[in-house]
Length: 337
Image 1 (cartoon, rainbow, N blue to C red):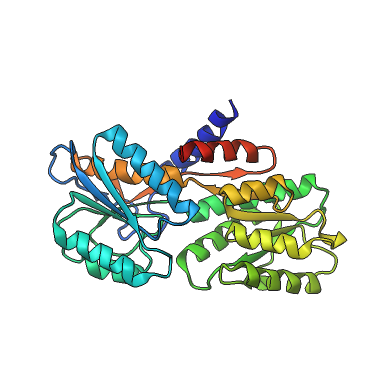
Image 2: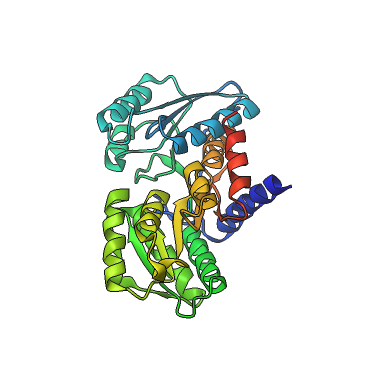
């Protein structure tokens, strides 16, 4: 029953965002851009390449599992590959170049490590191109399938304010520990957190934002700086990923002024759920990586079948907290079976 509840929550989030905010995640075309299919043919037996940032990390394994499930359901073949790490730029560039030039694939789905390079490598190709997880600006990209980061973060900000109220905070202020300054995903989550916190009646302290480059060690330093500036405590610390949220919570452990602080992260993966159950993080915004992989393949198939697609396809989001963390863990385990 609980598993159905989380799945329904993710689906509802995707449907709502799809109705209200298509194109909001920086797609290469306008909000009303529609991509024509490849000629109204059939996708039966089609061969699709999916090039991920890496296949070695847990998050990308869920994307891969979703893609492979879609391939099985839809009667197509998906070749999933990825670099050895998210800094192995040359490896991924070689994969993209090889697959684009080979002519062996009916569609190619890319999660780019470097958007500009990906755009250059697909320039002029007639093979339908899709972006997953991270968009890149190229006219060849038919649709971007990923998280609506701003809307998802706004959902998290609102949930954190409600949690802070329940925890007994009267003055609800929020400081964010950000990722890499200037990164589009970082900016979208920042704007979303700010919007959600302020709309829910809290105060987002923009001028006190900390940048930690999405690294846990630097998040510890950021949290130590926050505690020095605010010895009285802060109701909400939000972070652009779970690693930073967990690191901030560890840094604040033992400080009584921060015992009831809400530590909000982003991703909602296995490590986050385990941390939430252990009291080492309060809540996290869920990215539906499995749904992202599934919907990317679905989009490629729909395009081959001549259907028109939105330029942005939201893969869904939700919130995981102590009440739903075990349920989420069970769901993630099912994905990798």
